[in-house]
Amino acid sequence: MRFHVVKRDHCPLWKLLGLYVLAVAVALVLGGLLLLAMGVNPIAYYGRMFTMGMVGNKIAYKSFENYLKVFVPLALTSVALSLAFKMRFWNIGGEGQFILGAVAAATVAFKAGPVLPEPLTLVLMCLAGMLAAGLYGAFVAALKVRFGTNETLMTLMLNYVALYFITFLGETKAPWNFYLDDTSARPIFTSFASLASFPKIPIGKFGLNICVILTLLIGVLVYVYLKYSKQGYEIAVVGDSVGTARYAGMKVNRIVLRTVFLSACLIGLAAAFKVGTAGILATTITDDVGWTGVIVAWLSQLNTGAIFVVSALISMLQYGSTTAASTFSQVDSSFADMLQGAILFLVLAADFYTRFRIVPVKKGGNDNGNG
Image 1 (tube, rainbow, N blue to C red):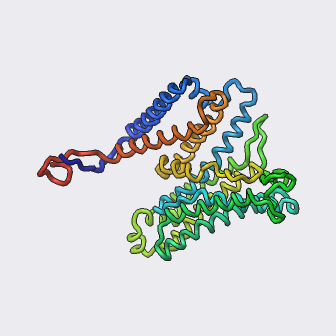
Image 2 (cartoon, one colour; image 1 turned 45 degrees about the horizontal axis):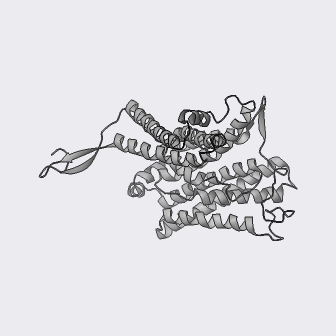
Image 3 (cartoon, rainbow, N blue to C red; image 1 turned 135 degrees about the vertical axis):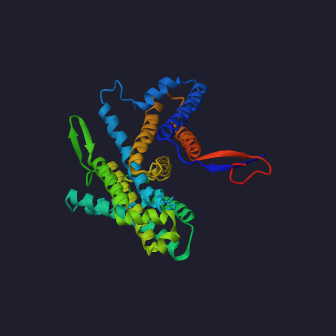
């Protein structure tokens, strides 16, 4: 007996959401069994993780501020990646583009911070991060449209070029290397927080970083851009069929270059937000948002609104696991990565079930799945 995969005509929204919730629940149960094996109470651990340690904490607002520092770069990077993915340009280079954006923004902070007003310095940091990351992404797009190179492989390799570059900056003590602390005997990055730092809006004791507001605003603009602009329509057409786009007279190469440049620019902006909030470079400045952003974009099915919801949940998972790890010493903070992987796998399985069905085909039956 053979089996055919047949596309479903329609899956009700309630069933879709129910399966997604079930997939997440199963992942949590599997994680709970692993916690039990390590001698940890799953309910206590999950309670600490999902509340991010804010319950009964007198400085809970600080925990929420730190949570937003995780959420902002992840959400903005995920939105940026979705732009390229909608066009079926597989930009796996978020890590490298983020690193170059962070280095460019930090360079402006060090050089312009002492001589320019802080607001102008922050604007220039954002522009520099966007330009550096945008050109890094556009380079791959140019190779794609000119020579037909594989963008997945190219962006993946360029991630490591950027990683080795920032590692070189962090390990090379030299008079020209202003990124390092010249008072330290060993090479460590120096802070520029006193030169430029994104401001916070005080709400009682809580300080709302302006980057949070800007990220939400950018999300709205990207949604409008994709939904109602001519350029957004072109992205959708190219994503559906390059042949159809060319037949309709669209300049596909230009659309690819423009969209990938914009995607990488937004990743560079996320990097500027991150480094401008942290006030210091680091070899781990990305916190893997380039990789996690791919997961978030696909879990959200490239829906801009859903990306913010999924980013909030994944950020809660990551930051909450770090918080819980400080209470439960048996569990490493990387438990979040395992749980995140399980959720992704099971949600993708649920998504497959909602889109397709497996039909047995008897020997000699028709090939349309009805035999």
